[in-house]
Length: 219
Ligand code: MD3
Ligand code: FE
Image (cartoon, rainbow, N blue to C red; front, side, top):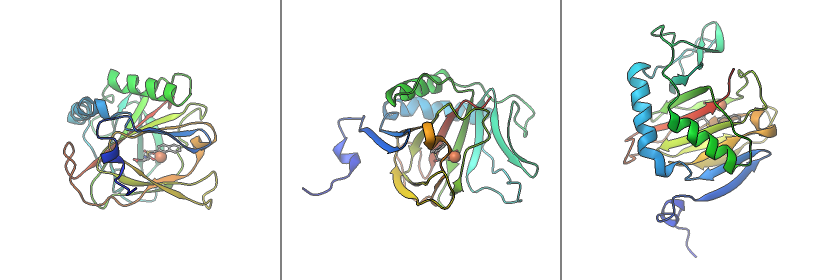
């Protein structure tokens, strides 16, 4: 049988199923697709008050991925380091509130992946344009690694790299497409990961962009 690709296979079935990626890491294919329009509208409302910006790493490099946050705490980086903070450094205002749609999606995804309900208090919103990438890293600025992170991909597809506990561990590549949700808990919670340079393309809802939400319990 010829390979026709996931998009075509699941044209009439938005929920493309569940795949185990690693210990405690589950991909829920297409899980957020039926809510794509409302999720993108929520991102739009957040970024009207907390615009996307290219933050600077402690090493002095400007990140190619543009970022903003919503929730009680937001992830930031500058020359002094990485941290979560209650206010947007650019405006001095608290980050926009976490939309109820984000909380609902996080709860449903965590349950579908077999985790107890997560109540995220931080959502980092990443925007990739062609050429943007995220180097291999660990997410370890949160207070308690027992809570899983829920990630939601919207717009153009990206190649995601997923390694192991050590930086030099072998890396697997998977494509994350519009509507895919991944729940990262258990040992995978501290695994290295990154996103390869975004390729140009056109998505009907986001144009030449990819968005990624990471719902976290940071505090
Ligand atoms: C694996 N974002 O914001 S989402 C990040 O597509 C981040 O923008 C990527 O890595 C993106 O920190 C990847 C998938 C992801 C998110 C959190 C993880 C994978 C993870 C935490 C632990 C292990
Ligand atoms: Fe990460």
